[in-house]
Image (cartoon, rainbow, N blue to C red):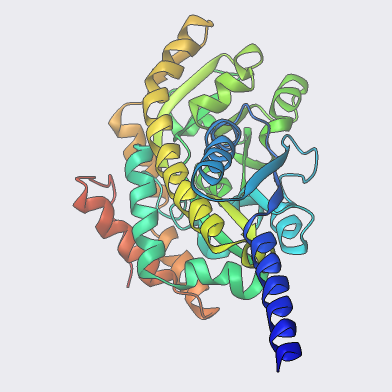
Amino acid sequence: MLKRFKSALVAAAVAAIGIGSAQAEDIRLRIASGHPAANTYVNLMQNFFVPEVTKRVAARTQHKVEFVEAYGGAMVKVADTLEGVQSGIVDIGGFCFCFEPSNLPMHAFQVMLPFGPMSPEQSVKIARTVYDKVPYMSKVFEDKFNQQLLAIIADNGYNLGTTFEWNTVSELKGRKLAGAGLNLKWLEFAGAVPVQSALPEAYTSMQTGVYFGWIMFPSGWVNFKLNEVAKHYTEVGFGSISWHGLTMNKNRFNRLPKDVQAIIVEVAREFEARTGTVNEENYPKQLAQLRSLGVNVKAVPESVRLEWANSLRTWPQAQATELDKQGLPASQVLKITLEEAEKLGHKWPVRYEIK
């Protein structure tokens, strides 16, 4: 009996040691983006998400988190981040869904409704409502790509920067202009020649005449010094689009202690909101900065916006019909987006009708 009791004590002691060691972990996480820290959302990954997770884990748990950071394509390129997180090359990745038109066709839904709210704060709130009401939007990352969506990321309001001055939609006809993913359709309907590109290529491409403009938010023009090669920035008001995301490899997330998981989710939601507020605050400052750098910044008359919007009048329904046929919740998503924008006071120049 005594022997058995001693054995039980030893076993309990060993178990206690095991539990104690499991409770205190040194965790290393690889976080990456194909975009450089000049991008607002990558800057927030580097200067908010990483330090906040590190600090809160240290303060509120027995664990320690160390991040290995790789931005600007050092570990994954802009079009490879989804796969990089899926395979575990990186643990956490920030990227634009625009580079995944086949894998994530629904996630460009705000692009399918051009001339939406220019407010990034409103944009990310609308997107969050859509994701919460339509489970597919988040679940597809888990079900098909072995990752968890941590945060939606807002971009600033999209306009058109060019190497030439223009005043009417007809003046864009035949011009080679760049975009990313589905917003190329905005250019196509205006009669321009759309060219798929990525921000890191923009400076050289406009300098060498590969194309002569970009559908871009002002932070892109400022942060990538595009003012040096393209002196015209025109406020068209296509809308702020929340079509970037921060995702984490599901296997790696599931292996983390529960308290660390909770902190990552908590900080990610705050990061999500900040992508809206920071972009919102920066927009007028960046327009002013462009003017100070010698860029011709102007807004098109409402008649030009209306003409461009009218050219796209039937496109949202065409997109919805095509995606609905693939078994995707396109009509549901677009209807919610239209209604949520209107609840926030937005008036569409053309009220798209989705059946």
